[in-house]
Image (cartoon, rainbow, N blue to C red; front, side, top):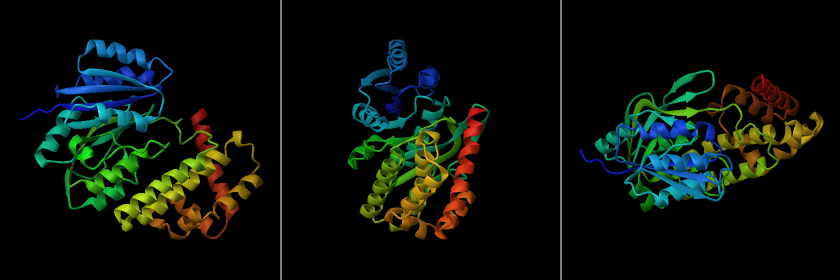
Length: 339
């Protein structure tokens, strides 16, 4: 069997605690014809030194430094500099099963896939949980809508996927640099819109490390700006691709982003707002056209149970009940995080 060079792209920022474990898991891959691009995104910790040391030990490792520009720019830098026929993205705080590359490549080679995919483990400090994107092994031909809809869930991540580089270059597929969140989902929406064949193996071969403290839990004065950018990119994709069937999913995403704005900008103590002031801010926010449309059009079936209830409160202008639901969930999560 042919064994083409496969490039593994690892964007790195403030992950020194986990980086060596990540790198070691890549060095141990049973598929040996790989290059590992360690791209340090101006990280102020000891990550750069760890990468330099690793590059001296294994000739397949390339250490690349860039001024801090964000994960999208780091991944795009990797796409540009990669020599491999296939690309695999790995986050610097995660790790991989020894056979990840081998099995993804065999799957891609068997079905001539533009993208080869697998399941994963979700790892927290307490437990390891097996996760599947689909119920069984599957080959997607002329079924892009299933994959596009899935991009509005965890499936939108770039890890656990092997991409054919010539396919990405042909369609000019890169990550949007100015997005602070969900750049992965926007990237994969465009990927699966253009892909002709994608194949999935229902084996957990990637370890995703999940933290309680993340960018989706921290106070952010610019939470609404981040949300507007995501909504704009999602809407632009639906319009340019003419995938109008995805509009309900866009409205679902908008509802979740509205919740994020309230959770990140208004509820934290750093915001300095009273409950009365928060309710007034919520009233103002839901009058904005983009959120008003989502409140009117988002199907209940696409939401989790707590968010179905919150959407009901918003549709019937029960702002006090909506605030109570959001604040109770926020305080409970905050209590768990600090216990």
